[in-house]
Image (cartoon, rainbow, N blue to C red; front, top):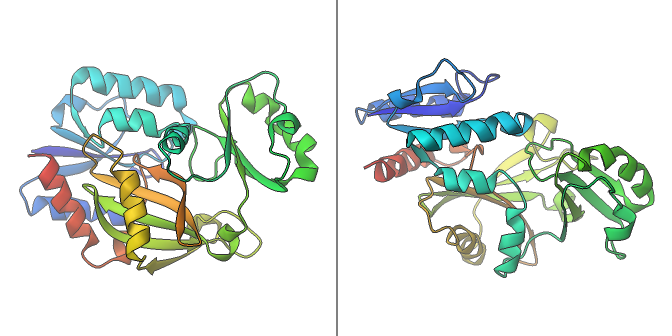
Length: 285
């Protein structure tokens, strides 16, 4: 059995955490190696399975990534997560489907690609602060938080972006600054562990590269059940899913569910790496 752990050009050897997978899988007689998804010299048919891990530039190479996904699909190679899930998850309009299923999401306006962006016309009247970002994005890419009083300036900035990309307009929730964002990590649809992420003072971005502070947490049973309900909406197998949301009055408000390349925070929970490897073994049988 030979597995490719998919990564990107700026992380050719994977993150330090994901590098730990290689010796762990070797214990089970599985050969695994880092493989840059955009490397045209790779013969993907050499692998029995491709596992999406650090493909952190996919949103910057949208057309190339979509073409590559179609190529892998034609080759018929098993992927984890499945290509069907990856193709859905890469575009955040999937949040609309969750909303239609009765799952609470952050208040969101879905803006389809347009040459005539008019945020003033579509923003709800009671919003005072908002976040705007592309639907095909990650890591705060082209993301801005703004006061509604600055909406004309933001509209001018995002007009050319809207002509090329679908956008999300979301109500800014002050809880992101005080309570932070909580990530619920699931392996093979089973809850593994959770991490809370708070932004640096004066910032809204929770990513560690922007000064975000991460802490292992133990959510109560109700919150885990709410996150589990979201994961259970997937009919396909899921090697991993990270449910990210804000908790308001013990209710999880879904921000996104990451099924392509999330950090899984192995080092924040004892046994998490083993649980992940066990899930790989269950799904490649």
